Each structure stands twice: as structure tokens, then as C-alpha cells.
Length: 219
Image (cartoon, rainbow, N blue to C red; front, side, top):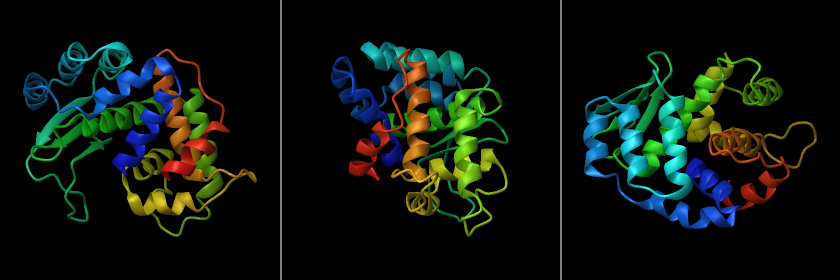
């Protein structure tokens, strides 16, 4: 699930030649000082320190996220597991507004970026007039009657959490199409979240049609 989201963000970035160099930085390990701040529960400080170790747009997005995610907490957890007792590298707990990272498998760039984007997405949903909220609500309403599980169908927030982190739920969305579009619900979802990231970066959104090209290679 995390690799799918990371690839989507990286692909969105690589559409701009200026960002190709920056995308390579995402494979780097977290700086020890960033890990230390995360362990201290200082998410904004960790993102700002992360920004200080990056260049270009990666530094900009980290700084923007540090500002946008004020009030979001972070915990580094030993042996992080979900309600199915499956090991996790990271997750976002919307009830406590907390990014949680596993001590052994979650202190890396991919997990940190994925979970802070997850937190940003869920927190954006509180603004009912935000374009992302409206777009994700459209997708949710179009597919919830087709889903054969209670998980992800009770609310938009639950739908987003499942779509961000549950591979089985993602597989279901990958086989669903809405409004006669040749783009799956999963690709539409990641495209919408990708545009939220582009907004944080100060970039213009991409058209929905571009998700077709992105999705062919990655979903």
C-alpha cells in the first residue's frame, strides 16, 4: 500500500523536469537527528530538520507539511500492529490525530512521507468545502454500494483510511469504475491525493486524465 502511494507521489513530481532530481532524495534514510526528534514526539521539528537535509521541492514540501500539520502528534512504537495483529511500518490514528511509526521498520523516508500525507489528507477532510473533500466524497458515494465489506463504507474518513493503508481494500477499488470513466476508483483516489500534494508544493493540479497514464504503470 505504501509503495503504491509513494510511487504515485514520485510520478506526480517527475512530471516536472525540475523535480526529477528531487525525487531521488526520497530513497535516502532518515537523518539520525530526524529520528531523534520523531522519538521525542516532535513531528514539526522532525519535518523541519528533514527539510534542512533536503534541497529543492522536497525541502519545500517538508516545511509546508510542518506548518500544515500543526497539532498532529507522532509516536515511535515498538512492534506496531493493526487490529488484525499484522505488523506495520507506520499508520495514522485519526481518533488521536497521531502518526505512529514502528521503531524498527518505520523510521525511513518512505514511511514518514506516506503517513504525513495520510495525516494531511484526513485533516483536510474537516474542511467540507475543500476540493479534495468534495472529490473524495464523490468517489466514496460512487463505490460504497459496491463494496462487500463494512470497513471503509461507514464514513468518508474511514474510506480514506482504508484506501490509504489496506491492500485488500485497494484491490477492490482497483476493480471499480465510476461515471463510465476508464480510470479505476483507486487511480482516481490517488490522483486526488496527488493533487493535494501538488497544492502543498505550490504546483497546479493535473487533469484527471493524467491518472490513466500513472495508473497503468503502478496499480
